[in-house]
Image 1 (tube, rainbow, N blue to C red):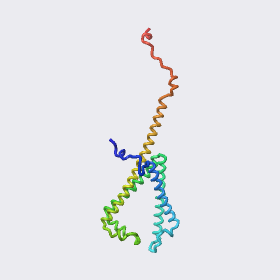
Image 2: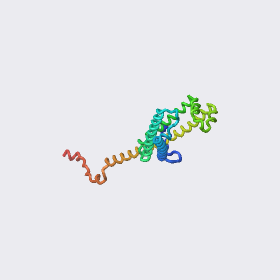
Image 3: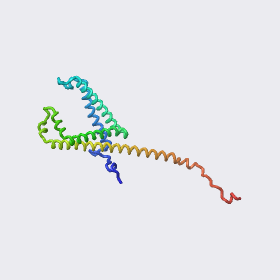
Length: 225
């Protein structure tokens, strides 16, 4: 009987490319996104007067908290670049252990988006509260706010459902890449062990020919005479 993991295992992903190639492309794409975010955050930290809120109602302690939040976001972006680089290197060099951190990040991100969808179902009024916090010049704010609460919930859930389906597909691609790299590495180890054992247990042909043949015991009549 085929297990569910083996039933969903495939070595190809979107655009008919190999899961190893898809994981490398995904890791590079995430690295570029986080590199852009890190560059923006570092630019904001280097020029606080241009990017901080300049409202007179803000106190100095809020500005300090804003700097702290940007430092934390910069550290998270740097960590994400490291994790994505490890996944790219692991898929390229066939190192399965290097792919695990990126796979765990995908699971964590999928769980967070699922919690957002559940919170919208449980507390549907949060959408209206979020719309009220948007700036006045936000495009189509009044038209969106005029929709019924049920319609807004269905639209948001449909949008989040599409995102979750896409993220689940990417998780499956990375998992299949991990299984492919693991199975490839285990097959190479078994081949090496088998070849090594054969070399040790079986002597060369010339040595086998030179071994003298052991003579059997003398016949029973000769021994009694």
